[in-house]
Length: 92
Image (cartoon, rainbow, N blue to C red):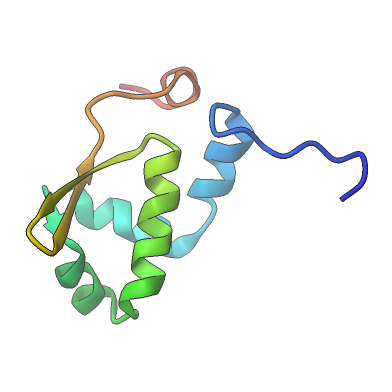
């Protein structure tokens, strides 16, 4: 892409693009209940694991979720710390 600047993860545009996807919003809604394993999220959403993992990685880059490995399983939860973009755009 000529002359186009890539969106940085700290920019508000990245956060809004992240939140614009219905699957990512559903994931955030499920994570509001507490830490959850990816396997449970795939079962609940009825979506294949690679797609869920890709969306969770995007949410993590945006600073909205944190991840923890437990053996071969990944567990995700809402992030305690936030980025400057999330602090300025989303209420605490």
